[in-house]
Image (tube, rainbow, N blue to C red; front, side, top):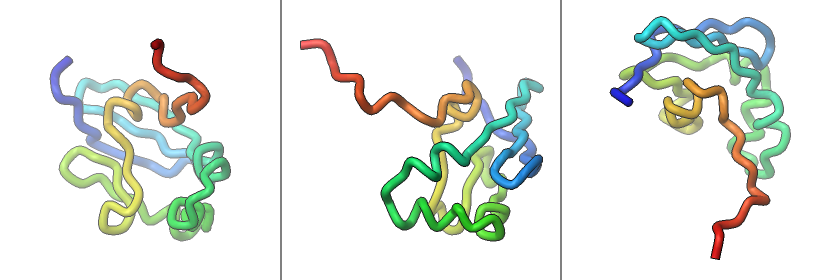
Length: 91
């Protein structure tokens, strides 16, 4: 798969962002489950709707602050920002 970049990001609802990628694929991603399940205070800080709304697209990536919060573009493209932490590698 070639490099994929985000070309636009629009806040749809409080924690939902619609992303459009450079191949014209669009994803609407709900970040609330990820934010509420996190135990890390720096991530939970983005439960503040004003702070969450401060995202931008930079160099084809979705970022908050000085890259304080960002996600792999491929995960955003596939709308799989949460990974099952209970899975373990096969022995």
